[in-house]
Image (tube, rainbow, N blue to C red; front, side):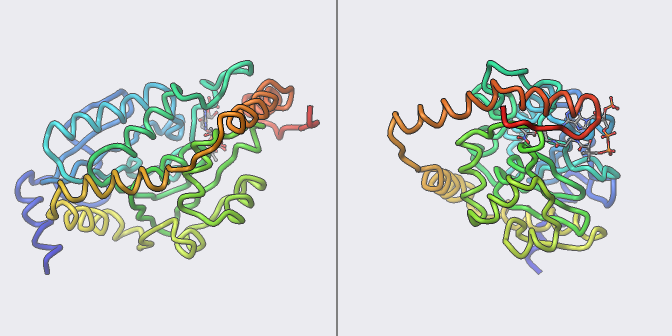
Length: 289
Ligand code: KGA
């Protein structure tokens, strides 16, 4: 079978393939909590901050960007993004401790999470999110910014901006709208409730839902298939699709009006309440002011 053959040659080259934790990056450190590994023509980026449940602060986001660059320099053709083996939280989303406390856009263009998302979306080869465990907030944006998603039955996806009183950015909303129907996007944002793996597969957020024991091998095999195809054709098609799906012209005045509405939300007492409630490990009490 073509896939096995491709994977086998990849394994032979580096001799590092395995199951469970064995594949979780063995030969590179792109940032304190981000590890890289190369298996034939497939690069693997592993998020490994168990203590903070892979919350994405500047260090981790910059680590992912550096990992992409290092893998590109090593001529991989596909990248798999995963959490370290054994983690039941894939990522807890934006590091809430690093969010600005009002008076500044919490998801501005230069936010490190936003920079990481752009790096993945413009990376000239497929990036596959391999999801074992729960995905929260901005980490769901990260999954949606990958080109394909594989997952097992432990996966779930929640966008929790409304728990924090955080007005999500317009670019981020487009990422959701590009992949999911608008009524589902609304339900997810308005309830902050997780979408389980089965529903995520039904609405095609997940390309392939496979058993936990198979997830790693399946994902690497899928990656190996793509790695054997024309990298130039793939790079340009990925860029075309990005440009086409990002294309959403709005008038300057409309954009400024939306930014003004967002500013009211992130300058509000409710946004501070959301941040304080998380820090104090209690449910927030929102007053709409
Ligand atoms: N930011 C900062 N620290 C976090 C964090 C986050 N997003 N998530 C978890 N931590 C810290 C947490 O404070 C705790 O620190 C440690 O990680 C383990 O978490 O040990 P400490 O100092 O007390 P915890 O809660 O004890 O682990 P758990 O019981 O296994 O629960 C895991 C989850 C993921 C369910 C829980 O930690 C959680 O609900 N985290 C927040 C998830 C979330 O809502 N993230 C969205 C962040 O906002 C975001 O991305 C945006 C931009 N947004 O939604 O719009």
